[in-house]
Image 1 (tube, helix red, strand yellow):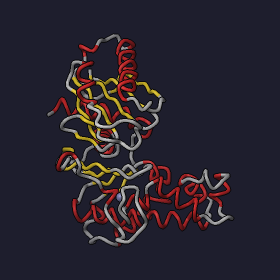
Image 2: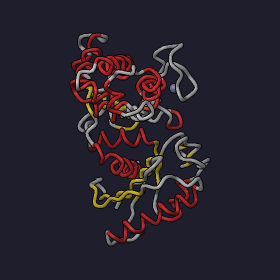
Image 3: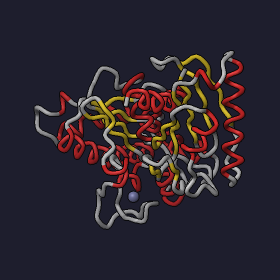
Length: 317
Ligand SMILES: [Zn+2]
């Protein structure tokens, strides 16, 4: 049996799967980290034991465990460095703690890489050997599957495409640099921009109810109703995202670029069709038809699949 854990800022997902990665049980804890990593991990292990006993097995049945965790991460040593959304977690040797308790090999992977593995094995990227996955959530994480394997680069830090600069003196990014892709299309920075710049009469603001509550999903809803401000915001989003995808096309020539959260919510008409047209305009004629731009396929299953896919990697290497 394989165990997968996906640790997020507000919830943790647990899954048991057979050695082909087929899910057999799953559960979720909605507790935010307490700031005391030892206690947080003890609570997670309690849930793992509960899930195992529900499935009628013990830890001795575990072949491997995998955890999808927020970066930055030292994946070789299994140490979480100082993830911004896990308060109080600094230099946490999670790999060692889990292995001591579970008695099986444990592998850790940053959440973007783990999600890329999941979309490749079980989601929109199935059947290809070269895909690029962009999370498109609060931030913009990316995972690269190249030649049928996760490409980690030096110390597992490859794929930081969210911080590729699109404008040298552009909008400030949470990473400290300026003009990064994430500064334009990441959910958190887009929400900040909307709150400060949305005109008083726009539909997104009416849907949100207040400036503080305004988020990209309101823009998506308003754009569906044809609101001009929302449509111009979507055009800006697509234009910046297309710049990054064109760079991906020229540098990696993947078979597919798979886009998560915000892009999936926006759908074909508001996001994928305009993106494909922009990318086709800015690449050579033979390139665009071979590089698909696709919505992620796993939806709510993603966190369960992500942890299990990291465990699968540990079996296969
Ligand atoms: Zn950045």
